[in-house]
Image (cartoon, rainbow, N blue to C red; front, side, top):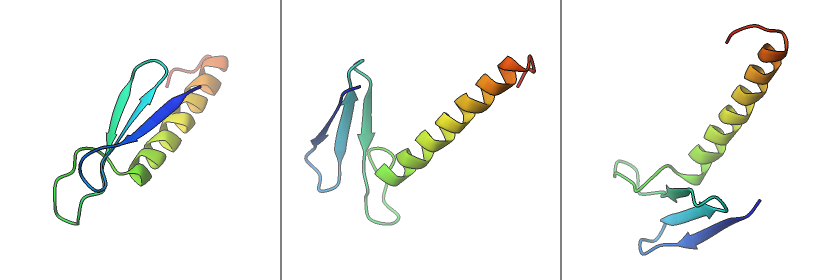
Length: 67
């Protein structure tokens, strides 16, 4: 697994690209302002939710239960 993170023009904007070419824009703008993407902490929580969901679907599949 390989991921590259590059700092963009704005103070807290970053772009992450994985080895499949998928791109995620991250930003942490001041409170109340729109950002270019989710914050790194939000992405961490999204990833945790995704990993948990995949595990649950996999376990349910082994028990032949539809999620």
